Length: 199
Length: 195
Image (tube, rainbow over all chains, first blue to last red; front, side, top):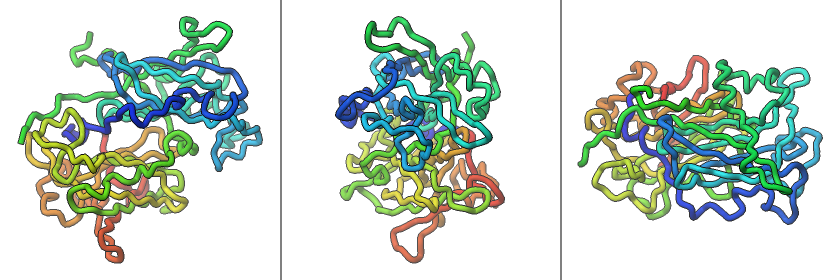
């Protein structure tokens, strides 16, 4: 469809509503969650490779045992009283985001016999406009469940699927503390500049 | 370097899944776009989402983005020489209840410039997310009976017989409430735009 001001604008976020522990999912409860502590970071870019600053990034995920803290999740794995599994942050001036969390477990979902989701973190992003809205999932390298997962395989192009897989990030791995994974996200952008019709 | 300036490929979409409430629905009432002091005609917008079988979708989520009553988007790329209404925030997000329903509190938007500067009819931009939907779908809500609908360039792209799927109508039982149903697929499928 043609792009008008309606498509080329979108919600703008300030830093006000983002709390200090919103991007550290291991510090949102009284104690520390079980599981493997990890750092997930990357950059949010447009299709020209330009960083998108102040983009709202929201995440949600299962705990280390593969259980979501959600009323509709009946998977008989333990809920972790110290893990909610929800976070948000804004990208910085260079389009960078970073979360500290625990690595989510695989999750059985009854879609078919013996159906298991590969470990994943749900990501929701707003770019510069309503058009660039993206909700997707980030995966971890070398997960043996990839070929069996109809959600990941819903993307027919192999290269496009690979772009959903984070890479191990030694540079950001913190000694004696946490492994790091890196995942860059590219948001769709406008096809034209906004209409210049001052009224 | 490609001539369209797109050297990076957009990241693919994946379904929002059944547990999005965890990350996307927080304590605040994100269904209220307009505070009590917002200018314009305050309305309640009641939306119900249906699947192909005509059943309400219990785990859908809808996001709205709209101009204020003066037709101004609260965004730096809106070049119009107007101030956005500080009591209006333009963005709203709600999950459906078990029958697929949700109610937003907003104002009827003003007209904003569209193609070639012609004014668009008042409309609200909509994303619909749901389990099983690989990528969210996008549409617009217009207001039935608005004379500006006749000259709206985007509505004209829609076959006349299907424009009805984009029209909110006044709820005769509840003054001030407008209703619209979204059908994700099937015979009554709502018109969704490729964006």
